[in-house]
Image 1 (cartoon, one colour):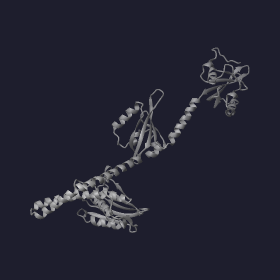
Image 2: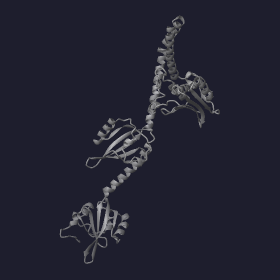
Image 3: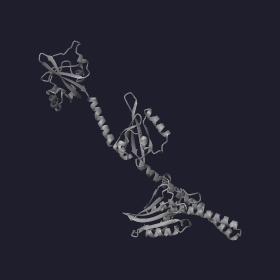
Image 4: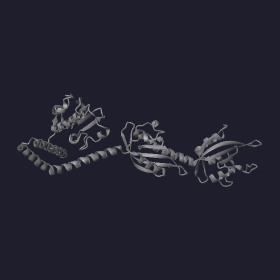
Amino acid sequence: MQKFYSRYGRIFDLVPEIILVLDEQHRVVDYNTAAQDKLRMSVDGWTGRELQSLVPPSKWEVVARYLESDAEVRQFETQFVKSNGEVMEIEADVKVLDAGRGRRYQVIIAKDVTEWKKRDLDFLRFSNVIEHTINPIQITDANGLMVYVNPAFEKASGYPREELIGKNPRVLSSGKHSREFWARVWKYILSGKAWVGQVENRRKDGTPFHTELLISPIVDSHGKVVGFLGAHRDITEQKMLEQQLVRSQKMESIGTLAAGIAHEVGNPLTSISSLVQVIQRTTHDESAKDKLELIKNQINRIARIIRDLVDFSRPSTNIARPTDVNRVVRDALNIVQYGKKNKEITFIVDLEESLPPLTVVADQLTQVFINILINAVDALEGKPGTIKVKSRREGDVVEVAVEDTGKGISKDDREKVFEPFFTTKEVGEGTGLGLWVSYGIVKNFGGDILVQSEEGKGSVFTVVFPVKG
């Protein structure tokens, strides 16, 4: 067996890579200790053996082409089969060794990359899962700057990837979570623990984006935190359904309360009102009459609140019939537009005359438009302005819009306008039940009330009804 020594002995036995020395017939004439250990070679069992026996048949054609090439650089990837049958992934480099006296050998220097290949495959699988999952994923560096977002995150946030990479996730902040909240989160994840919680962010268009967020630290081999993975689960729709459920439960609670109020408070109020009227007719003191009138007005106000609550909480006994919605709108306008507050207000009426009849309870619908029109009048605060009432058909629905040039509604208040007892009016000027009752009536008919408003620029309340009912 040919052995290759130098004045220092077999130096290549100290090299961690696999070294195989081949003769011109591609037979193994020598190998180093690393080859013996990694390929499970016996001491002399591989000498004189052809290299082809080490390579899977499907890979040999490529290996042979590199061995027969005259190229100066011959690097390739292939596989070796160990003596126990296991397959090893390798990166190989072929060199020429001139031994003198016309003897030339080819030396294969091979690096075992089996684990690297496995890691690459695992990474490929991981990256494909991350890239194509429906859940928004973001990865940041140790300083919290985003270095990766998947397509689902782009879709959910409304931001393209180019506008997010290198930015702090606070660009999505809704402002609903305090600095103390995020300080606690940072302290927790910097300790190497994963944090789970619900957060509210803002999309690029400003709409809310609710997610259940998992922030997991990315730790290197030395236990140092080098980044963070944020996995989101979009719960925006769930939050909206929860809010609708809460509103529904509020309405149900108010309905139960209204029945008790009607019984416990209604009868005593009737008695008090009767006594006040008797005293008014029998007294001649003008001052007392004025005070009694004030008491009667307050009693009527309380009775009106109770009546509205009861009307809303119990099913209507009226019968729904095909109704001309334009006629209902005109009836409501006749009641509202001749009030004392309306002298400086211009009413513009634009009603589409070809609207189909809607199956509703006419007097209930009249009350809806009266409530909306009164609110529009109040929004002008006694100043000159315009109220425009427009009806039209849009596909399968009929829309009636009431637009005013009043003070508008703030963003926070827009979310509360249909809640019971919510009002922006001064104490004593409104019960906070008008829009709430109107909303319930319209919902009972399968419709909806939409609000568009900007503070200082007026409001538009649009009542929408399905044509088919």
